[in-house]
Image (tube, rainbow, N blue to C red):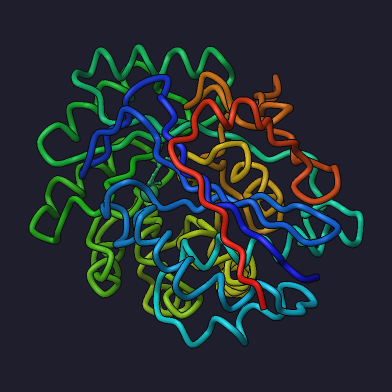
Length: 371
Ligand code: OSB
Ligand code: MG
């Protein structure tokens, strides 16, 4: 495969409702979409970095600069066999995992297209469906939270993840558990706590939560190990697991019992699969998180999320969870059994609707380096 052109397409997509984490409330989704061209095929990828450096230091603007100055010149015009060529070329670069993933993903998709098989099949995913779940941002009141959760449960979502932050945490979890005593419920703190908050965190043990996601800072693997030893609820790490090494560190120090795999956070599908395999050996179950993906990124993570150690419900919800109109056809919908279909067509298995894409586009650049 020889990539001859890449379009960088910046989108601003209004969201169906605001989404607040412990660090930021957003009303719209800023996205960087990449369209890669070889003489025979087109591959679409999505960089999952956001508008502000809140989840990690990356943003769509750091991604654009790194892509243009460092990453794209390395691959455009080069003869590549497939994803196995990625790390020998990109291993020399530090960080910028989401940006790396947006390039690495294209090599997988081209490989699948060349073999005329689905990305899921190429990755070794034999499942047709993945268990869905919905992630709910911090609401203004407990009543708002319970009302919103009821709507999603009514639609058939089999798991609710609620974001928490200090101050309102216990009141909100209490309200949710009183309203829904038996549902699969978990919380995500996005680093909002420290070991000083031990008393509050241990109170969470009373609510039969599936897990508590990333309570402490992303560097604090050691403190998570201390916390896990003092809590019954499984700790799940998200931000802390920046690659296979961190998964091994977390396993060897018993810092968590569960890991949320986001392929963007760990620099692509090869590393995501490596972490998946390593966790299986270590007895750590994983699940597939999300980054408000459009249908492009959603198709990609569905292809990954059917591997056999993805044993907890995902954060992969239907297209209309965040977007009035997704940029792919068909849009993703929730099955009556609370699952989402894994696309089975060649490559990503979805078509990009360029008319809808155009409606959301705020900037587009064509990158082409002539030899
Ligand atoms: O911490 O899992 C998170 C979204 C953006 C950044 C971080 C997180 C999230 C979510 C939403 O929880 C997951 C999704 O529905 O895509
Ligand atoms: Mg998280």
